[in-house]
Length: 306
Image (tube, rainbow, N blue to C red; front, side, top):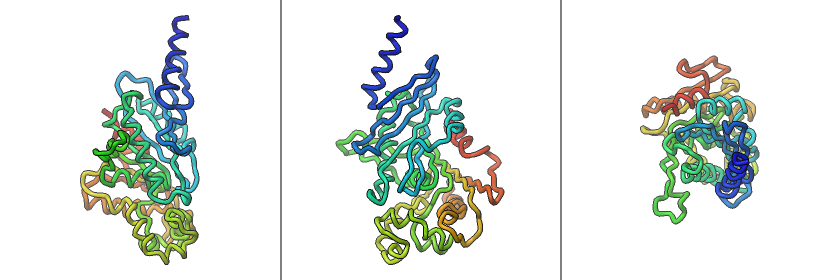
């Protein structure tokens, strides 16, 4: 009876004091799953959190889903096998939603992901997390967001009245798959080809309705360049791991091949070499596999190890 009362008390605390909609505790209390934790008032400002059973505060990987910033859900990433690999190593896993374009133009999807990260840092003690060992990961547009946050200046606003905004956005590592490292049409066309410009992601991100409208809007070009990770990469940024599984042919002819092209990774790696930032590129179609890591999850595990 006493043990049952303790379990009920624990569930009451999780539901009422962590802001989550539901909590599930596995048998023997080996791990905890907290779902739909709100980090803002909008229905899309929610994340799920998977906590390992550890004595010490856990490092954390925050996953940001893909979908061109126009669609997708936190339940899509990471794959269950990848999540379990991280949990077995004592690493907590969060997966966040964010507001979507075109209704919410750039930079709102990025700002939402940053706020989820800051919220987790603010409440690290509540979730038994180590706020100094946090990594970002994402696929496609989620990877684009993760890379930007990893390379941009710290978004913390120390003088803010909002305690969430006072938290740092700097991280220990970034893993991005099939992600974009630049978004402006000039470089998309010059470095990758017409397929990249044809994709909906760049023009919808700035509230336009076609590639042609984007080409004719210089101010939109500047906004897309502003949120391109390659333009923020400099010495002191965290280690990066970029993986790709699309064809490497240039120029890219289709929208999908273009917006997920491994050339995004090669250009980023070249800039990283100039700045001294460790950066690895895995490209399945080019048979490129970094010898140091089995894959991106192994990269995260090694970067977050004590």
